[in-house]
Image 1: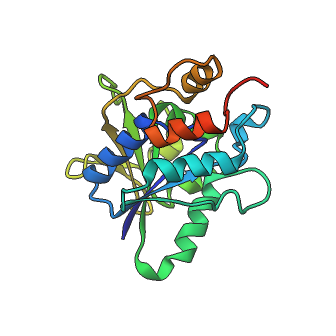
Image 2 (image 1 turned 45 degrees about the horizontal axis):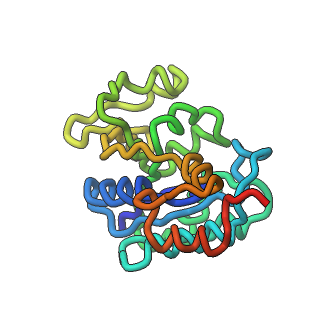
Image 3 (image 1 turned 60 degrees about the vertical axis):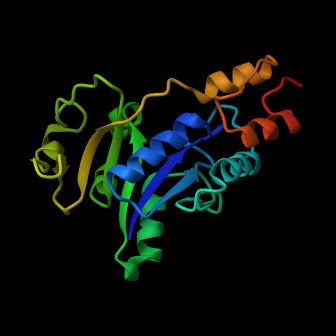
Length: 217
C-alpha cells in the first residue's frame, strides 16, 4: 500500500489543498491520501484556532465523494501537542503487517523549517517526504535546508528524481499547480462578510456560513 499523509491546520480546508493532494496522488500512484488535521500545532500554540470538531466536519465535507481521500483524527485522540513524528510512528506500527509505504506531504515553506520539528532527523528516515513546490522553485539540494552532516546521508537518484536516505526512504521535490489561496485570507474574508465562493468547496462554504465561523462575536 502507498498512502499519502497530508497534515496541517486546515482552518479551513480549501481548493488549493484538494488540488495539491490530487496531483501528488497521481504523481506517485498512491492508493490513498489521508488528511490529518493537527489538534494542537506546536508552531501555533498561542494562535486562535477553530475547534477541531469544525475543522473535521469541513474536511469530511470537502473530501466527500472522493473514495481515495480519507480523514484521520489521530492527532485529536492524543493528549498534548500534535507532533508529526508520533503520527507517522503510530500509522507505521498500526499497519506494519500490510507493507505500508508512507509519503508525507508538505509545502516547501514547511519543509524549509523542518529542523524546528520534533525529532526531525528520525522523522525523515521513517517515511518518504513529498515537498510541493511552486513554479520556478530552484532546487539547490538539501545542504541549505538540513544540517550538512545529515544532508550528506542522502544521495540523489536520477531514476526517481529523489534524494534517497540511509533507511531507503526518499525526499522528493515536485512542482504542483500553485493556487495562491491562504486559509488566513479565507478567514479574513468570511469575517468581513465577503464572498469565499470558489476558494473552498461549496459544502464547506455553506458550513462556514451556517455555523458563523470566522465572524467576530
